[in-house]
Image 1 (cartoon, rainbow, N blue to C red):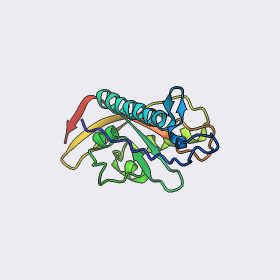
Image 2 (spheres, one colour):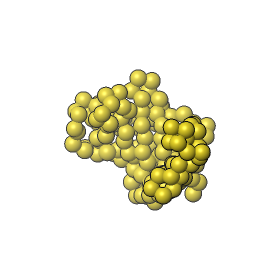
Image 3 (cartoon, helix red, strand yellow):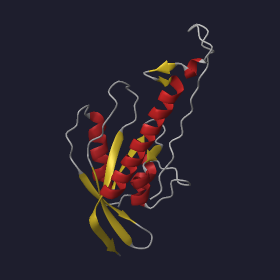
Length: 173
């Protein structure tokens, strides 16, 4: 399984003069380790947790996504790309494109579940099942949670959701 690298930029400055030290500020000890080492350790721990999340999503066949309600652009986890058979390096998902991928007979239910979740600040999960047809005649059955989690502190936070592929329900033609 491919794991996306987590990229971290550390901006550090200061000569440590106000600390009355000849050591640069980033080398000053905090809890027994230089400040910079603390930041690097935190970034490594975050990378490890990121890798665990990706592996858990792969094993569970569960993907996650975010959508910008203004632009309609979306970001999908690696597993969501895998479920929809798109290449994360070349495919930029959008909410509109996702809806076009949903089987025409299921699209209204998916839109209604999404709209209900946006209208209700604390929606009760009401999973919606839908099919995703592919050009080669296969159809995958998927399920969305029917509820969207939001960051309550920032009103413009993007909705975040999950998509799961139901067992081995792939049909042909």
